[in-house]
Amino acid sequence: MNLDVDNYANLAAGFLGGAFGWYFGKLDGFLYALLAFSTADYITGVMAAYSQKQLSSAIGFKGIAGKIMIFALVGVANVVDNLLFGQADTLRTAVICFYVANESLSIIENAIKLNVPIPDALKDKLAQLHGGKTQEQERDATLRETREAHLESRKHAKQKHKQEQS
Image 1 (cartoon, rainbow, N blue to C red):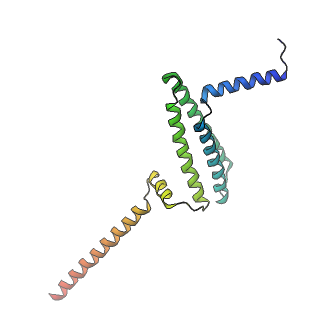
Image 2: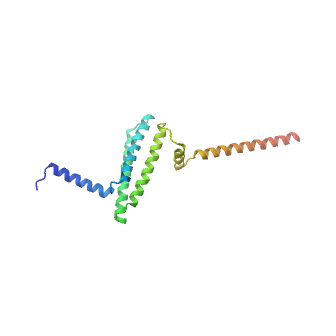
Image 3: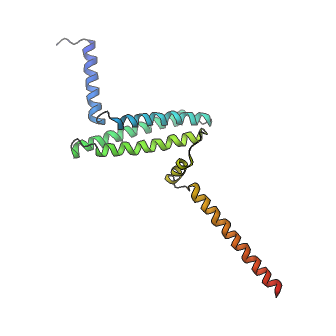
């Protein structure tokens, strides 16, 4: 069999494409979205780090390693789907959706670091996901504190008034 360089390249590309397809599953909108969001998150993270003068190759490497792990987990989910559920994309899709949501939150955090205006509703949802208080919760807490302080001052005024009368 006489194979030239083109045939070897075609053979290698076919093998890599087949391995990629077996491991990650079909190239659908979910996988494209994850790729787009992961890329946008990395780029906006570098921009945010640069703007805050915290750019670090070690942190950048850690970010790339994290992205590789995300895609490794998508591959594992796809293999589990195929082995346990027979061509179902259920677990793979759930893993991808989780990481797309996670990447979008990270992009919003990076935008905040870059002083990009973010709608309050979006900031509130981000605060809830991070266990913080929403603006409405903070406003309610401030109103409660103000009301309690007002009631406390009225109570002291009444006590002082009673003392003056006795």
